[in-house]
Image (cartoon, rainbow, N blue to C red):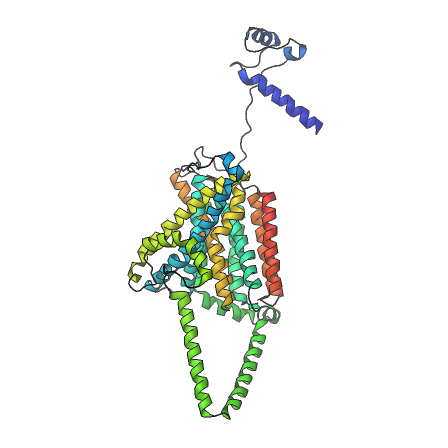
Length: 517
């Protein structure tokens, strides 16, 4: 360490002496002494050390480039700028940064309202008009919840900050969708959630391949348009696979039935389901025999109650999915506070966007779709500006804010949708949506934003200093495989203990992100 310190100090002295370097090559010691004597701005002592020194032109080390592609001097640069803040840095450090944090959280909820109330219903009508199959329409819904906000975040991050922000948001949202979403669904559900091996293994297989491609792309710290197209082709392959999902699923299951060991591991939940169905049929037969001895009047009353309860359930289901956004004052007291807090957002959205769930506004779903995209872009810009001010005040990097805070904010709509879906008993849909969003983030969100940046900067490459992000992506790949192995070990079920472990793993990831990013 002492030798390194001595060499560094000597190199710094050489740099200082070469500040007024002459134009000619190295000269003799006598010429150097005469020049130093004639210079009025330099005051030195004539010693043997200075008489023997020579002038060396310092040249910076050339950047290491292993891809063979020349770096463009104009790639990529900031074309947008953060607006000036109302508070100075000192004022924010004395407590006014809390307003920025509160505004950032408020923008997260605004993003949730836009996605849940306007974007997803308009996409549902679009898939109906185009006569898209159920599998492809499900893919569109998955992309709506997580892909659109993260796409705008990565695109604006390229022009406002750097490419690391977009990659950080995608990596952080991947951790959030796998650990936090799956963990919350399992931890806050009333019963144990059952999964089917085929959708989970399908999405994890595609996601693993996409993560490996992303690792290869990030190795040389530059991204060319060919590498962006290679990631974009992964999206095409995934959508094509989803289109022929049923045929491929049957084909794979037929081949797997030839191997007894594999079928016992993958289809271990099928015997339990058949046993449950058989036991439920026996219970129904016993109940029918007992009810046959009762009076006809009781039967009529019981059937009437069943009809009323079924009607109520249908109305509740319809109310959850088809009720339009309303600005009426809620009668429940626990909803009044949230109504007042969210009224500025809901009021602006209600005035500017037609609700496609109303019959009178159903025909304007294209206007709703385009308007919701504009609102999401505006909210993404506000979130980037606020996170920049918070990171500047707290002294942390913007990449750390993108991996931890922004990724959780843009994935909040997916978390709420997954919790509501899991509570209804559709855990497979919730997990599949989370994995599908991750696939679209890597194969559609990142490459499209990189291609746009290359087109704006004249076809130049996108330079990105991966650094800790490379290890974060590698860590995420190991976490993803470990999570799937744990689910398979639990016989494709997720209980509350599993949910607690997943949530704790997400907090460990947040701690590691502070060290790596």
